[in-house]
Length: 282
Ligand code: NDP
Image 1 (spheres, rainbow, N blue to C red):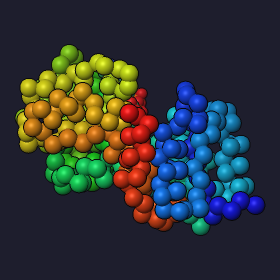
Image 2: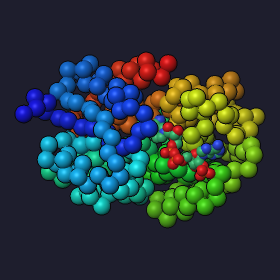
Image 3: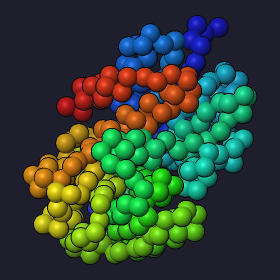
């Protein structure tokens, strides 16, 4: 029998060896730091094996797990229930065992919100989100549920951008609109928060985020979901314009911190996780 009181893991198809998984490195570092009897193991699970893997989770008494693509949607019919934002988004990245039931949560957007709340209140703010994929959806829904009043989705592909704006309008109290991305995007003057939620800038990509930097001003909060490199070109350019900036490392660390709180009920030291990630990403 395992001596570990809590176990969790990450399932998905990573496209790189599981032992190089940054999330595992970050989680194991903080468990060690706090002397927690808890393991986080990256496991590659193919699409058709998800149900069997989930049965294994139950049989082995895991406290929960993270799931990444392609499982974020496919796990939902197997679960006993969903948290509010996971239900609105239709995507789960964190499963939590509560009283014998496995509940799906989405901690990606919550991780972003935790970073944002360190620099601003969210109520009645206007946010511009570049991108309309999983990260944009998680952030958009969570911003809307946290009181943002206006959310502008800017995306290259009209159908996905429009779909996200409709989802936010239909399922949250915020007003969302879609702006097509065509060349450089001019950020409207009234925007408070601007987020790059595309893949642009993820190591080793050197492409510039298609935002007209001259339309940013120092009262705006500029953030990036890209955790690697921690200081993206977008964040560096926004710093130069005097904006308040938030990097993607914070979102990754905070979603992990929230997951541990769900699984183990413990508030861990986020700075240990951040340092562990920086070690890998640098
Ligand atoms: P998706 O594939 O679901 O969405 C990608 C989005 O980026 C789409 O809206 C896509 O537009 C847009 N996009 C991609 N390339 C370009 C380009 N060259 N020009 C314009 N738009 C582009 O990915 P995810 O949302 O899941 O992930 C996005 C990024 O967020 C990833 O790099 C991931 O590492 C990061 N992420 C970070 C997290 C963190 O904790 N820090 C958590 C989750 C994700 P279109 O619809 O037109 O294709």
